[in-house]
Amino acid sequence: MPKHTGNIKANNQERILNLLRRREDMTKQEISAALRLSMPTTLQNVNEMMERGILEEGEAVESTGGRRARKIRINRKAGYCAGIDITTSHVEFAVADLMGETAAKRSVPLKYRDEPEIYERIGGELEMLLKKGRFKSRILGVGISFPGIIDMEAGWIVQSHIFGLEYVSLDRFGRTIPYPLIVENDANCLSIAELSLECPDYMYISLNKTVGGALVQDGRLLTGEGYRAGEVGHMVLVPKGRMCYCGKAGCADAYLSPNVLSGEEPLEHFFRRLEKGEAEAVQIWEEYLEYLAILATNLRMALDVKIVIGGEMGAYLKPYLERLREKASRYDRFARDIDYLHTAGAERGEQAGALGAALLALEKFGSRVLE
Image (cartoon, rainbow, N blue to C red; front, side, top):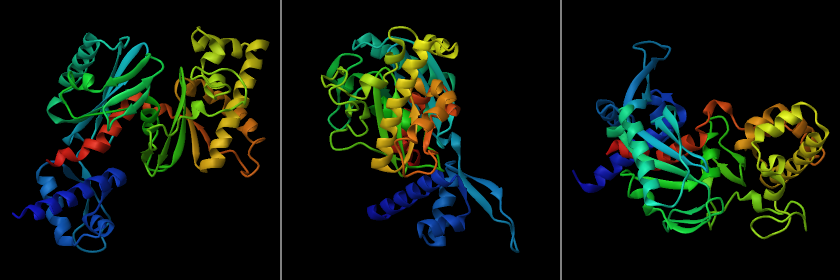
């Protein structure tokens, strides 16, 4: 077979795979129309992918006369991607099937340090999960969620304030994880965990120990020229305001980090006080919501997309979402209803960062199932 012919077939099969990941199931005729492929080409590629176990038949569609056509869908178990989320106190793992649904997950108490034994432990824990679930032979790639600025092209963790790192080589992960690898900022991974077919465009605000964010357009991360797109924590919210760890005054991080509420105590302690109606907690919370409303509405004005608020604060914020929307209405006079403000979905569970990393790996390495 001429080389270019093989490239065309591989390209067509990758297009079919990506289409079905977005649309879930379609008839062969619908695939042909959507990709503007001839029916013979569509049939040849679909049949070959079915023979290899990558695609399978789904439900039959209503007949308009003659034999009922069946929809085609991806065989979820044909391949998997794993995700690892590194936090200050533990490491979370998730495995996603070929359609991006969670197939396995676990959390391991482990404090990350830039030391060889830590990387070996992370790699070993991943191998244990893959072997237990019998995923190992079908792993297409691994994604890692890390709190810091990542330059994947250059192969560096450029900076991580939380861990006090600068210019740490990503090869340190690669030495103990023997799969194709992608490393991404934790806020970006959390934002991808929120991705749905119904809403492919949104701004994600991550309220963790530090404040970050990510912009998703048409289901893809916008990273920017210096891989810093979405760094909303260092937008100046209050000129000449509180000092931020970055050295500037008035950054959003200095007003919206959960530490503002709880200091060194667990966040749940603050919300217990708030639920009891303690005056000091109520005042602090009202001020916090005010600043969050300003940030969220400014982002809405600039981007005109749905605003999703997540991270550690996401779950705590749910009961107070209407109060936040009420405050936001005073800063946004263009919207009739502030229905664009949402908290991160709970359906992704505690391993959302790890799942987001797995989904990014699936986007990058998913087509390896065709090899």
